[in-house]
Length: 156
Ligand SMILES: CC(C)(COP(=O)(O)OP(=O)(O)OC[C@H]1O[C@@H](n2cnc3c(N)ncnc32)[C@H](O)[C@@H]1OP(=O)(O)O)[C@@H](O)C(=O)NCCC(=O)NCCS
Image (cartoon, rainbow, N blue to C red):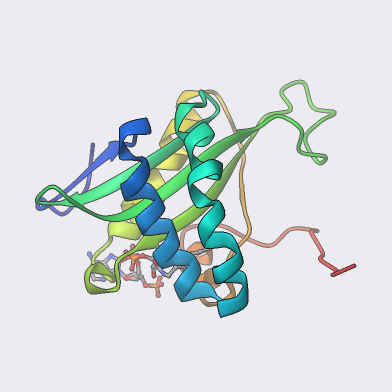
C-alpha cells in the first residue's frame, strides 16, 4: 500500500498478525500511560484485538520496514455515533491506536497510516472521521485537518 517512503510498506493486518499488533499497541499504551492504566490494559489486548482483526467494520494497517512492523493505525466504522444517527447515512469513521516506533517518527509514516484509514472510509462512502487525540498528538491531527467540534468530556 502507498507510503511516500520506499523503504516502508503498509498493509492491512490479518488475524495472523495478532502478536505483532499486540506488541505495537502495548508500546503505545506504555508510552501514553499512566503506568497503572498501561498495566491494567496490557493483559486485555489480545482478547480485544482478535475480534477487531476479524471484523469487517475494523481495519488495522501495519507499516513495515524491511518486513518488521514499526507502526500501525486502526479504523473502525461506527454505526451508533449519536451525532450522526439521524442522518440518512449514520456511519462515521473512527481513527484509533495510531503508533509509530520512536526511531521512525517525523518521516511521514504517521501521516501515511492516517491516510490509509481515511481512504478506506472514503471507499466505503463514509464522509466523516472522528478521533480522540492524546494531548501530545493534537497538533499532528490538527495539521491534517481535524478540528474539535462540540464534544466535551467529564469524568463521572
Ligand atoms: C502521533 C504519531 C503516530 C505520529 O507519527 P509520525 O510518523 O511521527 O508522523 P509524521 O511523520 O507523519 O508527522 C510527524 C511530524 O513530522 C513531520 N513530517 C511529516 N512528514 C515528514 C517527512 N517526510 N520528513 C520529515 N518530517 C515530516 C510533520 O510535519 C509532523 O509534524 P507536526 O506534528 O508538527 O505536524 C507518533 O508520534 C506516535 O506514535 N506518537 C506516540 C503515540 C501517540 O501519541 N499516538 C496518538 C494517539 S491519539
